[in-house]
Length: 374
Image (cartoon, rainbow, N blue to C red):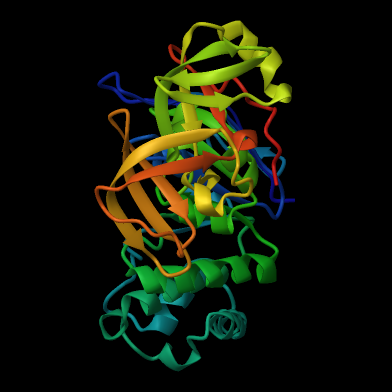
């Protein structure tokens, strides 16, 4: 079993800086877990503590059935792939991949077998005699991954391995790493600040901010049902739109109101929203849940946000419209047939089932747990 368990793990540096606070994470055997967050959130420190490259200040880390707090990195049965590849420039690809096995005094025939198998999985058989300087960035990354594979470890640790690659190559490598996970049946813990990498590769995402875990869940769970405003704004491209508004009574129903904007609150959300009647809240709606009224699911809807178009970005399959709405820069992802020009006024219809309400003070999602995860 290659289960990894972090229980109340924390890291405080000698200067008093607290990098990670009370981290509780369970990585199941054969799971692909992504630690996600902005720079400085503590995700790489967490990974390095699992690897044994950073001492933990509090808590326990368990790999398999063994607490590894005081176990040396080389004895933890993990393999780490670094952001800068960390290849030996004077060694060939074969020698780089074989080096760790040689240190462990693995028999030569076994080394050759493992290196060739890994090279085949990664399609780098033709590169085994080359030096790192003769390789492209993507090829170097494959070699770094291959060096980890030959170890046949309990757990693979990846520290932003794709950040040095161009956009197209990153996309290709995301697919390759996902295939690799399925082929190897391995436990992978992967650090990134790129939420697209997290959404496309992970079984489970751990979202961090300022050393504190904000939410843990499957990709669609954290996307459709974020626990707070930070998670809602960090996951999704373009980011969720936020508008300060109030919850009001309008006849027999509750609405979100901002000046002449009146958005109906669906019945299933009413019990939670009643607590905020006549109070200021933060209203959230994703760009893909806003429609040009002409192409809305329900064109006659009264749930409208009016805005003045500032920028139009045609992307082929969709169009992004940036609009000024009560002083907020709002982005809508609309039908490409939409006729839109800067300076035009536009009515955006809202899918009210997909609204989010955040407490103005705590920024917690008032409707957490109520959104349908698709």
